[in-house]
Amino acid sequence: MNTPTIVRRAFALRTVACVVVAVAAGTASSAIAPQAQAPDFSLHSMSGPNMRLQDQRGRVVMVNFWATWCAPCRQEMPQLNRLYQKYRSAGFVLLGVNVDDDPSKAAEVATKLGVTFPVLLGPEKNVSKLYDLSTMPSTVIIDRDGKVRYVHRGYLAGYEDNYEKQIRELLK
Image (tube, rainbow, N blue to C red; front, side, top):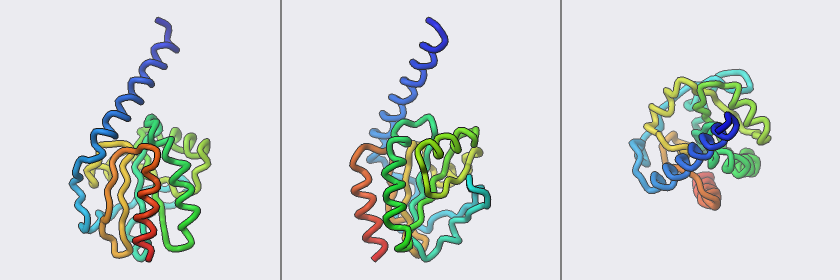
């Protein structure tokens, strides 16, 4: 077997594993319980300055944990981008927390997908550990008071409809 074939098979297996874990974990409970105060963090933004969750108080915040190797993450990005564009003027903030070891991969994928929301770099994975998240992607929706209201694990087409409903509810 040649190297390109091995690489393609390894990527395919990783993608399948990501999907299986995402689907299986979709109904799993999280250590971050709804109505709990969202743990604060500060991460370096791909566009330059650090961003701190606490500074977003008064806005509805979606924190999306993603990785470049995760096919559902890449599939979800355009949907998240659409939600960000649609609701940001109403007080909605979307923070994409990338957990790749190599931040340049995150920048490459975010650019390729046309991501317009802030991408934060967390190669040490401290924030994903803080939120006790092991599924990629994982999405946490936080209300204006800084409380976790929804936790989503994994992504399948159509999840964005539920995200939008929850965002609109919290923006009222």
